Amino acid sequence: MAKTSFYIVFLVDLSLAFQANEASKEVGIYELKRGNFSVKFTNYGATMLSLILPDKYGNLADIFLGYDSIDKYKNDSTYFGAIVGRVANRIGGAQFTLNGTHYKLVANEGNNTLHGGLIGFSNVIWTMKSYSEESHVTFGYKSYNGEQGFPGDLSVHVTYMIIETNKLGVKMEAKPLNKATPVNLALHTYWNLGGHNSGDVLSHTIQLFSSKITQVDEHLIPTGEILNIEESPYDFLQPCQIGGRINELPHGYDINYVLDNKGHKHLKVVAVVEDSITGREMELWSNQPGVQFYTANYLENERGKDGFVYSSHAGLCLETQGFPDSVNHPNFPSQIISPGQTYEHIMVFRFTAK
Image (cartoon, rainbow, N blue to C red):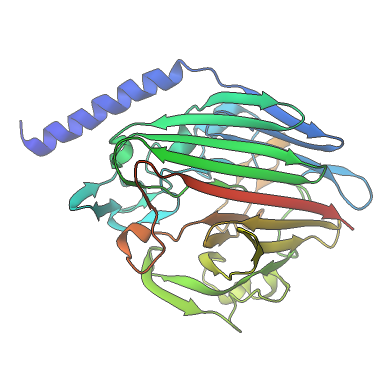
């Protein structure tokens, strides 16, 4: 048997064993609740399922796109609410070189790797480590050496926290156990402040604290160039309706913004989103250098919660992250974490209604 054929068979055998092991784990649903603010999660993909809070009139609504059953998340190609990794976003050519070793990854978007590969962190069952309904839930996962082609064993944890009565904190941590490896986790949430079943988000107003983007090619792979976007359709330094200039772009927004260094201590403000009809406002802070702003351009006839059908622009994603394809661009902030180091990614969402 040729070496290449043996390698493919070996990967298939590993994948089948891994899937059998995952099938034996128990999947649960966990709720955090304080007053009329409640959030639900599952340990499948460490996924957020819903977030319910009042509008300016006191009416409650779920502002989170998703599904009614866990089974639908298992066949999900939208990444609704999931933790994605080992490396979120895209890696060009599904390959990179680290410390003189060339690594070939599993390609799952043409010739590229998207959100960790064919079976990324969003497609596995995490272990519930700690849970208190009034404060937090922590999920853990151990990624094995060679999973989707990535080097080294990796211990990963994510903690979701209710802070006060209107804040949601997210803390993602990862520790390499035996080899240096790239790590770039992201929370792939789809928000609609009018309610998940209220239509599109084009009338939402957004302010993004960034004056630059990482330019991409036709396959959404960064070229390595960082572009100034002031006075372009990508410019949201001043609050602007999402739909105001979206028709000037081929498909909508799906780009990494380079965040300006405006913050308090180690967190910086990323974005402020507002829905004028309900008065709901969401403020996002993070410690990451970038954020992927995505306007759900490719949602089409996606049957979600309560049978509602989601269409293009039904939600918006703000995925704080390291820069896409950083492993192949030395001028980008490094995502390489070595044994003895800890990757830490923090997000804080603050919700108000006025």
